[in-house]
Length: 478
Image (tube, rainbow, N blue to C red; front, top):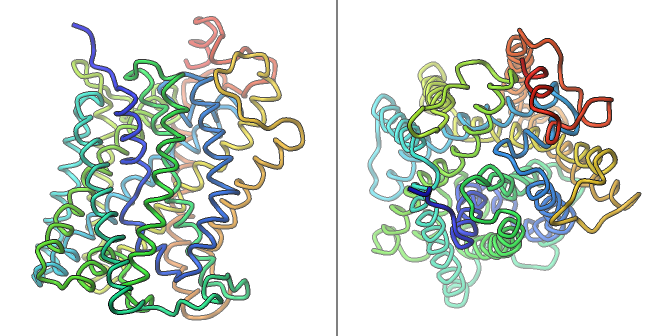
């Protein structure tokens, strides 16, 4: 019996479900009207080159490793191991941060307050629900991605339409003068939130790990990136307008902000508010499940090449799904949630976990741009179904700009830029990121034991991993 394949429609909806992180809309909206300047600026300087790079690499280097394989081919095993760790470790942190949203949103909808033990039980149920769903083959879980994309677009429509109606009848909740739309570069506040906008663009490369489940990845990936990208940009801008219309920036909750906005416009007991709240919770499951497929595949794939710890390599023989990576994710996310016990009920756990997750995800993408430069330089003769329209010095500039933006956003998110109380609150995040980065270096060294030779990357006197004889590849991996 032939394996079920993703259609172009499924791929487009998967892009929307994976990339549109609805829980990150409120933190971006907390910037105020200046968010629209940064959205437009980063669409041009980051999203465009990033999307073109992913489209070229995803169709040229057809493999289940996606981002990991591109970095390994361009920069070698050491950097491939690092980004596989960053890419994976962001996920349990992210899952834990979203789990922390569940009790907050339930409280916002129905006024139910949970004790810390009960809240943790609810959060653990979310984590292991996602973990179990991640055991299913990707192509059999298309209903999760399609449904998640449809629900996210429904929430966007409600927030945008209600926002326009609310502004027309009650006026805007925030100052709408022209000056509020322009960035104040002397203020550090908006710079801290820039990483959230970049985070909202992440995920296009996940569909490159679905290539074995697509009918025609060379045709479908570029089309899905264009259609999905335009849709996602429109969704984010509409959500920003809706939130800005209804909720004063200083009152916007970073975790339940979307639900709060609908409640502010329609009333907390309005049936549509309840529906939005419930489906918002459902989208968290859909988003985590769709991301889990890509991230677990990459972690398992890297482990089989001795670039991640061995437990990640376990694959279910019947379903061929990376269950070892999924279980490790569930265990680590659960341990992260249990940190709430010593931290206390009033600790800002959502923002700490979410910020660390954002930083690690951005760290995992940064090497992709220099890897792209190496691949163009040393693998120029490889046939390319799609080629980004940059060459020579222009290519270097177009790859350098998004890489620099990633680095600056990481620094602004976790490094205290002055001695103010607000900036010093970044210290726990900085300590956490440094500690987990150090753990990753230890894991990298341990994981490569038994491998006689590291793959140094293309252009260093060894065959490409994508066309080397099978025995040469096996020798490098063993």
